[in-house]
Image (cartoon, rainbow, N blue to C red):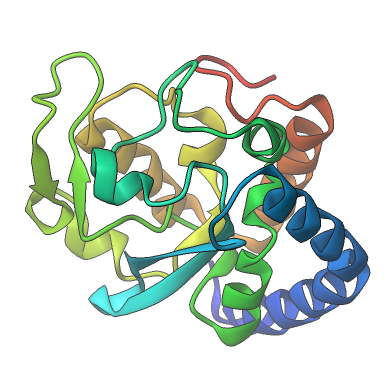
Length: 209
């Protein structure tokens, strides 16, 4: 991404996220009411994520799992037919509407619309060849380059990487974005994300389109 495009990225994020917050606000109210009607617990789920230059920030989402699931089961990656996910949570996750609160993270500057996935400081290693054990993401090759840019709501890894692969392979998708990032690529990835949302394919384990 050249200097001119880089200077456009932040104003674009502010404009799009600000507009998104205003337009989606009635939907937030509906989602909040349904979450509260389905069971006790908070409307939002917040977790510490690693941002640019390793800075931690509070990542916001609508709660899609039973209350206190982290305390009961640990911070495990969602699996197919996961019993922790609520009924409204299933709808929110396949359409990515659970991530609407991250528009606030983008508006604040914690995140961008496009970039590497915002990960926990310690992730559970999953996928074929994964140990199933907690692993600090700072130990994964490519970490330094990955935190050189702002994490994103969507990106190459979020769209193209199969969900159940080991972290170092997911990092490879992130590093590919960092190498090829441009404003034109960002627009393409945002449009693909809208298409996946429209088709309700975000929870698909394989190809999403």
